[in-house]
Length: 149
Ligand SMILES: [Zn+2]
Image (cartoon, rainbow, N blue to C red; front, top):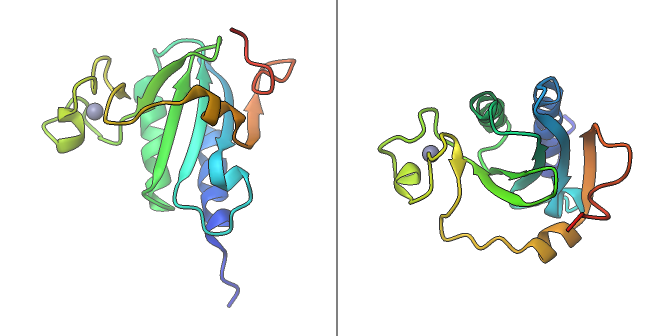
């Protein structure tokens, strides 16, 4: 039996997410970031960067994100607006805000499905300089390589 490595499994999860999320009109770009994009065969988790025009379809986006858990539970979807300002991360909960531990973190659920703080310090320089594999883009030029400030 051929055993897939974890990198392949996480890429499958990201591909599945991309197939669905790229159909949403608010989604502008989807990329794999971090160690999976860097080719690590045994990455800790799957980091996806998602550029959106607005957060109106966040409930749908979070549903598709949660469906990645059937491949692996360790995923994070980092949301950015079209100027590459970090908006927050997608909540893992089906109901957000809920009374679960995750959603008790201040900033989760306001708006629903968006986690803004949770002891996580977003470092734009590190994040944006990490390897990226763009799975879907509606931009003509490469936004990730050249973020607009
Ligand atoms: Zn939440």
